[in-house]
Length: 299
Image 1 (spheres, rainbow, N blue to C red):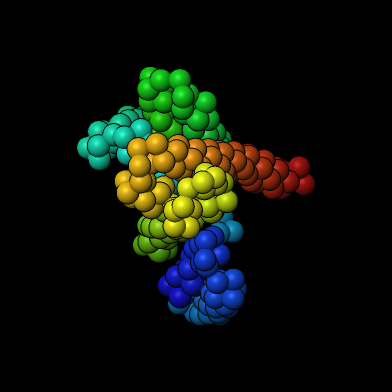
Image 2 (image 1 turned 60 degrees about the vertical axis):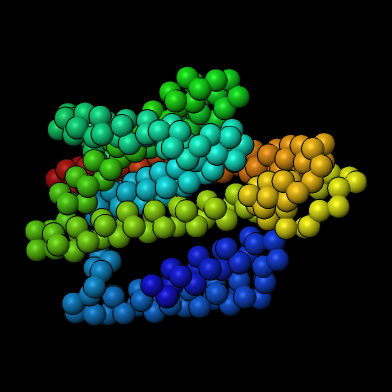
């Protein structure tokens, strides 16, 4: 807990407009130290809270990574997409929520379909495929951002389908690859992957979005407004309500442009993360297959 809290604090403090680099470095140092201590204690304990030796099993490791990356992407996307729908597009919270329902609906449909494929194809390749599908969905959504709602919904649907398939195959890999006597620990570690992915997704995506917004936001020449308009689009819109009509519109346009820049940066970052995770699955899968073939060759 200490490691996660201080590391996330360090990230948020470093990306904040008036954040303290000193506090960010101290937070990161404390977090890394706590994490090292925790790992050392687990490795030396005869009855560890988390048996890190499970990560030596390729199926378990790839399942954990899939769960972590999947929840990281899902919470991050739902957080930033709903913000854009309300603050840029002007939708109500209700309509914004309905708009993003395509993600869970597609997940629900894709989960059992993926389950039927588990006995027909190698599990590790299914993980790679669903993560790739998730990245493709985000890519289509980004490309269709200014082209109409149909293309955006299609992209989010593919994104949700990839996530649903990913969660199914992640659970299967984690529980089927762990030794019988460690089934309870494996289930707990799966939950940890989901929770950590969700928590860090909101924290890190929010921090990245805020950093890019602050760096991109340029206060229009001639406007005498507080510098906090560079903190977030919310702050800029609140300040804009107190200005004249023309000045208000000018500030809103500048703020929304900066937000869209940060939005695109976040989407691209998530696409890269998902593609790297997908390729990692293929790499780990090919290595495990080569190791399995070595005894046969020697025989």
